[in-house]
Picture 1 (cartoon, rainbow, N blue to C red):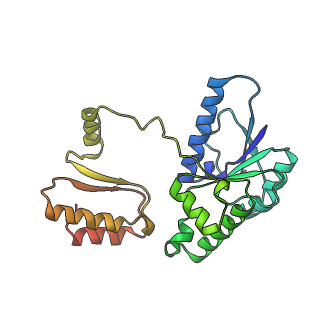
Picture 2 (cartoon, rainbow, N blue to C red):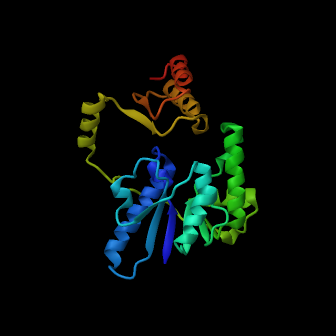
Picture 3 (cartoon, rainbow, N blue to C red):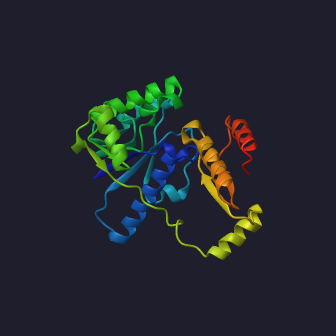
Length: 255
C-alpha cells in the first residue's frame, strides 16, 4: 500500500507539528526495521522543493517526493492532489487541512482547535483560514486523529462530527525523556547555565494563549505565602511579549 504524507512541516521551523511528524516517522522507521524486511507499505514524503531539506534522521527509509508549485497555497490546492493521483497513492496523512480533490482517502491529525474556541489569540486571517480548512476536513476526511479525549470532544462539538469519525491516538514519548542521574543533571545545568539554585521551569513558545502572565502571577503569590527558595525560569523564543513579561516580573518582584 502506498501511504502519502504531507511532509512540508519537516522543512520549516521547529514546532509541535514538526515534532509530531518526526516522532511518527522515526517510530515507523524503527518498526519497519524490527518487524520484517519484506512486504512493507511504501511511504512517500511530499515536500516543497524550494525549502531546505529535512534532517536525514526524519526521512531515513522513506521516499522523498518534491512537488513544484508557485506558492504554498497552490501546492496544497492543486499540485499535491495531482501528485497523489499520478503516484497512485492509496491513503494520505496530513495535519489539519486536507487537500481538496484528493484521489484517495485522507486522514488528518488534529492537536487542538484553539483557533475556534479561543479566537482572540489569533489574527482574523489566520483563524478564518484555519477554521475553514478544519470545516472541510471535518466533512471530507476519512478519519480524524485527535491527540486527546478533550480535543476529540471539542472537534465533535464545534464541527458536529460523528463520534465514530474521530479516533483518539495519543502521541508517543521521545526516548530522550527518561530518568537521568539527578546529581549529574544538576551539575550539568550549573556548569552550562550557572543555575545553582532550585527552580521551577516553563518551556515552550510564549504567545498570549500560553498564559505566561498567569504563571508569573501564581509564582508571585506562592513566594508571598510560602518560604520558597525557588526561582522561576521561563524558556522559549522571545517576541513582542518580552517587554511586558519582564515588566510584570519586575512589578511582582519575581526572579
